[in-house]
Amino acid sequence: MESAAKIIVIDDDAIASFIIKKNLMDKGYVNLLFAEHSSQAIQIFKTEQPEIAIVDLNIGNESGISLAQELLKMNTALKIIFLSASIDPAQIQEAKKIKEAKYVDRFASFDDITNHIELI
Image (cartoon, helix red, strand yellow):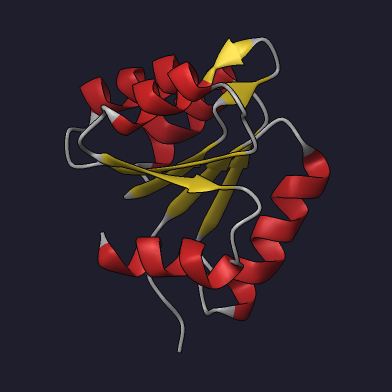
């Protein structure tokens, strides 16, 4: 069953983006957008208006948390899933403070990730 939800994946790691894409498509998500850095994500966001953003906490030298906050200013209904392998407890706590967001460890099963998508 295909899902109409428009999802943007924002991650500077091409391999991680490919894995996310493959797994989302396997689960029936077909309306997928991808960005490798913040400025590209903002441009895509302005034109495509995704409902869900899967955001890495660290996008190169940029903060995924700052980007998420900027995207939320543009669309307060946006739902965010932070997906990261960060081991910085302060950064993870900061991400969890954003009420519109969920944090998922990058090494969680993909079922955990899609469960979060389905719950939001």
